[in-house]
Image 1 (cartoon, rainbow, N blue to C red):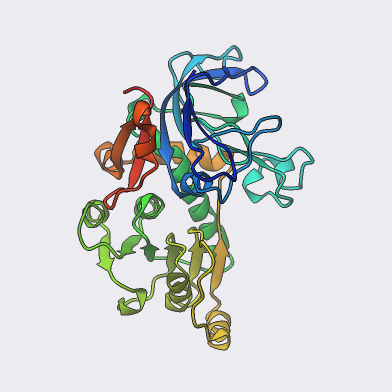
Image 2 (cartoon, rainbow, N blue to C red):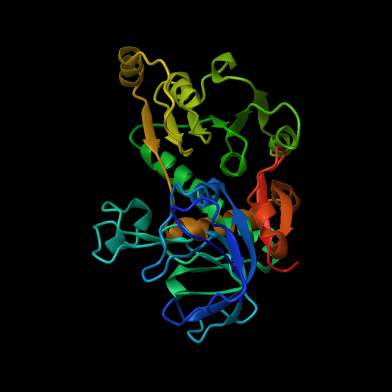
Length: 348
């Protein structure tokens, strides 16, 4: 079968193999036909040789951690042939750590977890894949065109889950949320903020293209520029850019007793001027919280599936700005200036 692979640590090794082995039942009892795989920044870093780990016994890593497929067979009866399904990316470590032991593998403490398409597990960018029932998430049949957004949605569901958990430390009634960055994660974070009844603001550098309209369709206010120009203090900031200057500005801008969730990953190698004493004073005297959030566990994936089923289908479809056939796979991993979410389409 065909599969998109790289040799981790080797830049320029991206290939479409025509003779990749069929998945074995050791990977899972549920056999799935691939429909689509989403592309994200992590894939690009793996292709550049900056990250990634091949499964034991092989030099190749199949890419793809944002999946959508259709069940071919499930002898366990968990799902039925023809059902839409996505595969959970992270698997708990074998030790396991205290969090992995209770299926909170997104909070793994010893970094011995594995991840499809990223770390020691083959990804979903292959024509057929297998998954264990506990890592298979069924989807509403109506999500056949947009269900590939489940993985990034699970990430922001986890972020909002932890935001509201932290908020319970005191009497807290958030009204305003600011999302910095209008990429897929940022716009999905704005969707979930809207679903939670918050007044939503989205900040990005783009002044044209699809981003302002997508934010506006959620009822959000779109801002182009810097945080310090905003004339309000948000109760919650979900920072999705990873840009050091924006991260720092978010910590200063959040309202007293506010919460800043860092959901964007910085590349490193860049410095900003920081008055650590001033920042410390602000965070302490205003009882603010800054925390990082990444990945998701099963309950977040299930909640993400529900969130997508409640969202406007046409809005979700608008996030997918390019669908690239498998035969033209290399184009999917070459970002365009107007791209939001690019999909590798296994049905074309």
